[in-house]
Amino acid sequence: MMQGKMAVVGPSETITVFKAAGVDAFAAADEKSARETLRRVAHDYPVVFLSEEYAGPLQDLLKRFDEEAYPVVLPIPAGKETGYGEAFLKTSMERALGVDILFQK
Picture 1 (tube, rainbow, N blue to C red):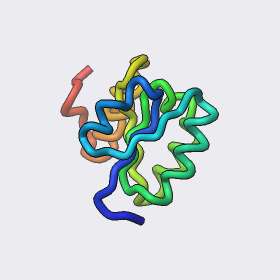
Picture 2 (picture 1 turned 90 degrees about the vertical axis):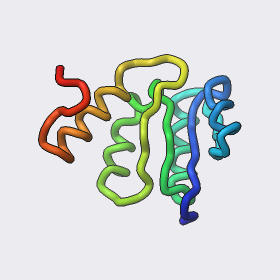
Picture 3 (picture 1 turned 180 degrees about the horizontal axis):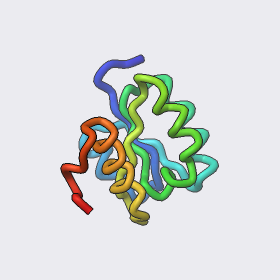
């Protein structure tokens, strides 16, 4: 695994800004290609950002990654926001800290 490397998987029109920031970007046109790409890059990147619109449909795969230390797959709002990224962050923080310190909803 390459230390310090980050990747982003999402629609090509939404990942360009990540390329500019030095993140390796992998375009995925649909849920199927996002799943295949995520599986492929998971072996080489300790941190993978995943477009929120694909994170919801790929929950089964994300749960498997959650059982391991790496990769850390983080849903991000990029393009079509579904609310999944916010819900994921809220649940993760509650699990880690035992309390909702961010959203308090």
